[in-house]
Image (tube, rainbow, N blue to C red; front, side, top):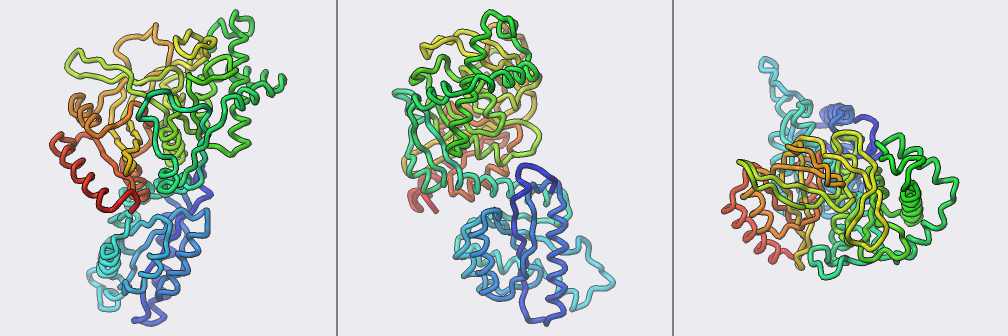
Length: 504
């Protein structure tokens, strides 16, 4: 682990054994467990601390660890490893009490067998192949949701697998703490941005509450004049400022308004400890312009956002921001806007009216002002840029009434083949996997929304782990997707969730 935004969090490393072989072997097990935990703790692919806990040799020891983990906020989950054989009935009470995510690490201390030295003492001490199967049987018997990592603990692939899961566990922790503020309601007559906020809190933990846009406007009005100038200087330093917004520009006052909106919005969010928020162009109250630049910059600082009152996307964006903290790439609010259906490969052009996060930008953004045909306010300031090329994921959260569903499409972002001089918004152009027709039909079959979280940092494995922890349905569309398989998967999922209910 290296210093980063998740460095204050921990996973607890728990090794299993028993008293059959005496105190000497147990001392070796404890030393080996500390060695493995220290090795994982030093891995850059794992963003949190890995802390060794006492070796489990009785039901009481493990139950106490689980109860302590539940009560320790910095602990995001447990990693279990059976160094020797560990009778699994002694794990039942603890697993029944555990409320934190669990990863089962199937490994052993040594990568290679010392063929010439192997004796029964070695076999008895190094029998993870035996002990982990006993533990896994018990986990399967009780239907315990967990991740599994298989491979030597020093191998890069094994460490990366653990790192993916720890990021998902951090996302789950964030979901339990997250508060979303909604300024105004949903865009009128739109279905997909609606949903059951109580059900979301019951299953995912985050809270969603509404606030009058008048409160936001009042916060903007309270911004002191001496706070505006430093922010304007920051804009000039970080972005290519359009001439009309420069110091002597004809529309400088609009940039001042945008700065006041940002400062007022930050004040409100900080006062309420909100890490995600929504607004809507249909309810702007006394705001002089639809927040564009402010929203983009807040997203760049890690806040979640959803346009038109889309609280599900706002929450998901914040969770993904946390899960990808410290990683290369960016994460943004996004919308599938229009298609290029000409040529051999059809493409999707993603954008929004204003609100795309500059963390995904390919180059230094341009700060510009242009008319907006909706919202009935003054022209808003926004950042304009193209997204960086490379692999990414577009993921949507929808409420189906009896459950939540995540729909994720693996995509490849490309540079626009031609300039876009008359499109004054941030945008991303991508080729969906496996191909346009399959990906789009699968998305439509799954009921995916037009609003998404776009991320060039998130891995599908981390998203899969998060969905498993949260007991949320996940439909993945990638290079392996076939429409027949997707149709069958959706049918099977329908039956499964009707049987088990919204929460497993």
